[in-house]
Image 1 (cartoon, rainbow, N blue to C red):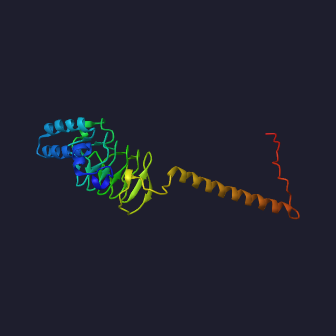
Image 2: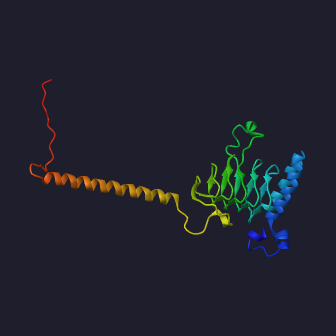
Image 3: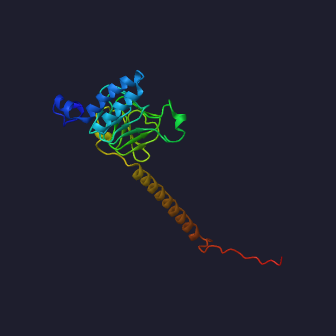
Length: 234
């Protein structure tokens, strides 16, 4: 936590005043109980840590080493979520499932929540929903809604989340959003549309010039031919 949070000045400060630390330690204990079949006891103590910290981690989730939750309030991690090493989540993140109320009995025991591989960073308010994988060193921008797999090293933003950058740089990037120029997928689509409109305008101008040139030649007629109306007695 100290390495990824400049506000942390000492280990004692983390131990006594960081709710994320308390939530993670509580998860380690309840997960131990869950693995040994004490499911109700694990859920009971999990709820106590939820009340104390504002962070809900299901004891059935699988979490790796050096997991860090910054601020933490409102974080929800579902039962079948899997988290690798050196993963960072910010406040308000949800690792959830899709349509949990639809055929709930049929979903029991199945993988319903996402898998986050090593080095993933998820920005505040983001929701990652479904049993897919966010690959190694991927970045999820704040308030993004991720509904499908994210490739390794990719940065996704928006609702639904779209890839805006692919890179292999594994340096820490706060809130999942890289510094510098980050292309807006909507603005990029509008720019592409503008280029297509300009290309069509150029084609129309060329056709008009070609038609004007043909009309100016000897024997050419600049007046367009009017359609003929043929009367019929039938």
